[in-house]
Length: 283
Image (tube, rainbow, N blue to C red; front, side, top):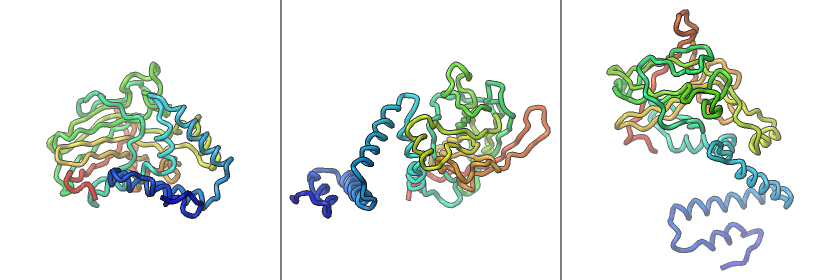
């Protein structure tokens, strides 16, 4: 065993790892230590700066609760969430691209009839969402489950406003028909800021970055024999498409919301989802 030196700092720390550590944990921690020490040396981190970092991480943990996960927010705004998603979902070229899950999904949303309206608070401009769920060969997938959720007209999800919004507002699960078709009514989503009243928000402000996400509808699409798809569709023309605070926008997921003249909706959004086979979903 060597003594610690500035020049060999990472090597000395990694040498202390025990012989029975699993190969995967050894690889992860060795790489983490190597890159972390290289970062400290690269910027020649001062003791006061390291103190600020420790305080930031402490406050990030302290603000976390059952309703708020500030570390996920930190991962999101640093682009790590999207990078992990990209590495783990290298799907065939025909398959719909994935994006971040986000913190506002709720288990147990009700399954609703085809065409039902998920907007329960009566706010917002009604939009018909429709399309099909297909496999990579273009065949329709019957009985696929399409789980959807979005913010309301004020830019809040129901879980952010308990007692204000009805439970399961702007949420629902739909089952595709024999042609792979899904359809439901909701509202045209609006842009909203991620929570920026904590350490992550203050970090964004210090970096000259805004906290806004472009308008989007969330989708979680599942079917037997297919890889689970977590994605959004984004409203074309939104001011924040190229500066999404969490880097979630992909060009293939931008959709033209078309105005319509109808007594039941003002907008229409069409999008077909293509699911990758489960056996080919991991690179």
